[in-house]
Length: 448
Length: 130
Figure 1 (tube, helix red, strand yellow):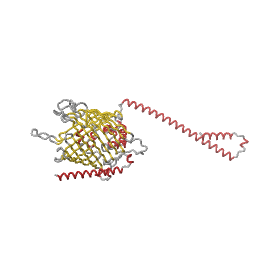
Figure 2 (cartoon, chains in turn cyan, blue):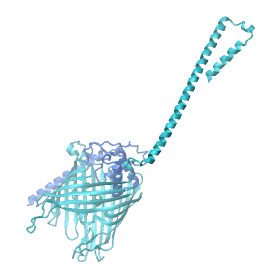
Figure 3 (cartoon, rainbow over the protein chains, first blue to last red):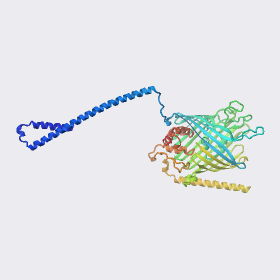
Figure 4 (tube, rainbow over the protein chains, first blue to last red):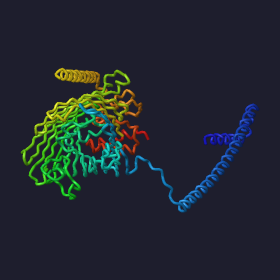
């Protein structure tokens, strides 16, 4: 634009000069005239060049406009064709982002293979255990989880009357339901669980399955004094205490609870597992009174990652016998300590009391304390040592009827991977029950 | 018979003493070597991990100064909670969808608040294998 103005000015100046009267032109020298003439010629040349450029630009714009209109037409045709194609054919399946799938089914669990040599007895491979957990998640808040325990056992021996009985190892199989519960996350601080629940009496029952346990067998008191699971409903949740990770946990539940033993003449014998379902006499009535109630309250105090202390107190009480005359009551105090990724210690103190027809109230108590130290914490960087953990446990049981047992367990865990473990333990036992003897246990465990 | 009992007692005592010494010594060295800066570090997933010989590389979030940090990260919560019950499982072991199901299971089993569970899940999914 500026160039055009300049050229226009120059042309006007030239015209004005051409219109100057004769007496003025007479004063212009030939040299100035020639210079001015040359300048005008140059201006004319530039003007013609600009006009040509302008014509080329106009042609280019016209071509672009034509191409644009053609492109628009092509796009319109393509859109029309795609609409027609979509109407003519079914919608093709879109690839699914797996992480956003609304439901998911998967299997977790563990497997154990065990060799045991008890004092005074022949040693042998006594267990091949497969314990899958099936998980079905429906949406963000609903989970159904069921755990089974399948163990292979020796088959029956051939008898003179039936010599054809198969005696292959593993031909007999036990198949138990460990738990089956539906979990519904109601809000950030409350979850409803219903079904066959792993009871929060202490923490061992819920966190001691197979490869999670640092010992190949359960503490005496856990097996003898409290039920492992119960059929009923539970509300549980946790409240954060500040921003450092501290938690206040709670669980409140009602389950069928312990009952009298199933079978003729066993009504006065306590069965911690309870009896629900078809009884030995073919009926489905329960062998106990009203449902049992229980609760656990705990606090989790992390100092920093891998350093934490967890304390909990729990209890359960309810009628256990068919007539509803006797109560079963249990209380558990539990503690777990982690000091770094290499050290863990945990223990539980358990008391229970139940009424009986002929012995009054029977008071039982027991406890266990166990610790493990991963030698990787020594930073020796030795391949075998680095994957080894030393473990030890002391546990005790008083059954309230005169039998006392103390057990000292020492052993190791070798980690092939973080979920494939080889455990070796020896249990020293002191008991006034002569059938209780020490034993060597070796176990291969795998968690998946 | 008495000699046999004495021998057994001696073996037990020696074993228990040795095991205790190793544990106490290791614990003391562990406590001595623990520095405050380790608190903000992500979980150890290299080959020197005491629970695994597998080499796993994860995208661990950068540590923040303690003075400006207001909320624990998913990596820190993962280190706090998973180790409560079992050796840590590495994020690369599962897919993002599998972690979603597993975390719901663990949320119930370990009684973890929903907010913390979501942060752990985010960490696991961000570093998941597929």
